[in-house]
Image (cartoon, rainbow, N blue to C red; front, side, top):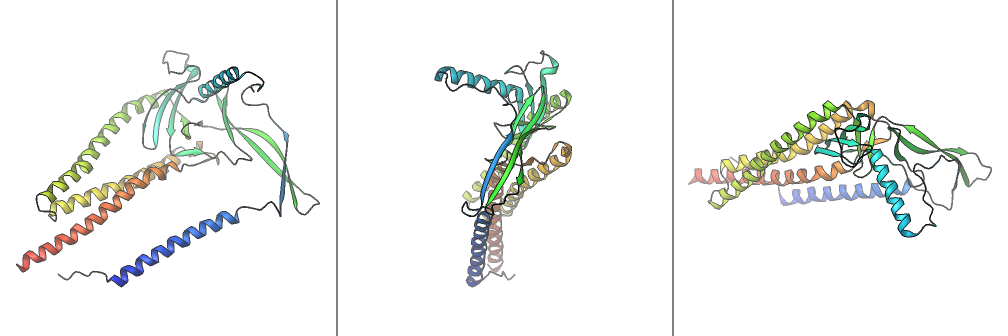
Length: 316
């Protein structure tokens, strides 16, 4: 069988084309970021905050001694985390988790007042768009209801050509979900039964996944190395192992991204325009994807080596 191998010229052209595409993509991103910004020499923006709501948490006088100021600040911050449902017991898998929290106690107590218990599903790869530094969006809980405090601005016509004025006011918008500012994830309130089932199923699923990864990936790779050490690197078994490992590594990010998109469809009624997909998902998914590319390259290389070995055996 004749094996067609690309010439060196074709390989160089392909690599050069990919490099040009990458450089062009970087330049496009740079130009886009420049085009979305405005210089202060041509447009002057002024913001007038007319209607300002009372502060979410009590303000601590800065005239207090440092120790008292820090103690009161930490106390308010701790109470805010309790009200937001940040503390409690939780179990999680990649992209999703379950939480039992209390709005009164640091540790979840199943015997406390049922009205103070909070049961939630954590969507770890969906987060809150917190706005810009000029117009931030603040999340808080009051009377067991979640709100977003936004700054809404309206442009005002000015006779001066180079002046843009805005009249701004603060508004509180109720939302149907909770938010964890610590890990920047959306939390959906659900029933106690749902969370109890997830607390049982998640550890079982995690154990099964861990065993599968150990057996098929780590175990398969060790067997692959042993086969090479025996002097038979291009065996049919080794080629199949590489193909299986590459398939699993590619399937992981595809499955998790699809599952995360499915969560959006399931909980769509909880998602307001302020919710967006977290960038953390890409930081998690690119690692198995890169490993999948490496094992795919190894698979093609060893498959080619096996073909050459088989042809050599036939000629001998």
